[in-house]
Length: 280
Image (cartoon, rainbow, N blue to C red; front, top):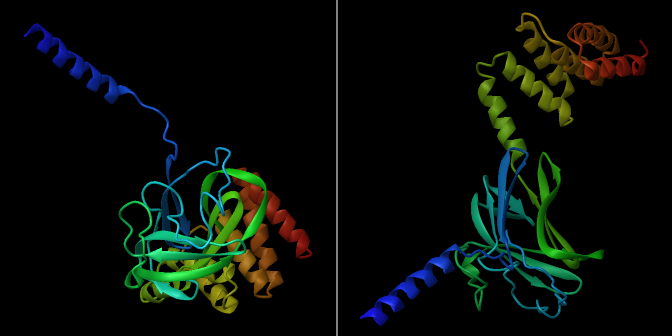
């Protein structure tokens, strides 16, 4: 009985010690999110390391489906419908598989994102999109498998994949134009000063109808009791882009005066630079 009790105690002690012991994962998990335009994009993946191994063409064979990472399937979640390689993707989560080759990769967005590893054979009914992208060599080794979202614009970005001396990038488009235009159309039924200001600023930054932007910024400013220097600054830039340099100069001077009174060095400098550029 005494021996049995000691054995039970040893088992409990062993279990407790095992539960408390933590060691680094060989392929640590990583998650990041990025707003592209007005669309949330999230990536969830694991990061294996080179550890002196040859990766592509050896550890990761050419011409075979790869899980694009380690452990659980690498996942990307799009907050809106997007377009990848000319293919429309519904909002939601996808596993990212790939077929690496020396000069190009085929990257696959797969609807069955749960589970680990890549399936022995892809179910074509679950392939939401395929895109072939070129391989760009990197001079130095990227020791840890890395994914990024780069080259961000209001209308899209590039989903990057890096490891060893290899980089591939998958461009995707987000529906910013459609979302903003729909929002503008909706609020224009009863817009306030903030709506006019936001619409004008968007048209200005995206190079759209500048005459309409000027009309909207004027409406916005007419509804604001005392416009501040940052609002006057935006109005002056829209006037200048619309070709009304005289009006732009008058507005920049007002913005400058308010910025000086408020002690905002950034807007003081920006207004002075613009006034000099516009010949004031």
